[in-house]
Image (cartoon, rainbow, N blue to C red; front, side):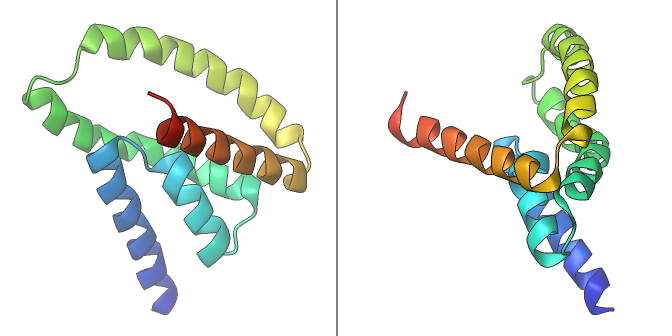
Length: 118
């Protein structure tokens, strides 16, 4: 039962941050799953990618309020599919410790960019 509560709390946190800031999977869910669920980096990234499809519901709220340009979504989505296909093959071939370090560097770069640059 306690494990179920942890899963629900992680999902809730990811959902809140995804709806509020457009993030959730990579930036929130992966660290939470590796820390609290003791998932490996590969497993957490795979689960995060599966969870992305549930953000569709949040996107509908933005769409109904006029904030989603479907042309942009489709065009970026095509690149997203291709990029995700290529990079997922690379990621699953990397050792866990290297992938985790790469992810950590990514988080630091994003944080620095948001904090110190326009």
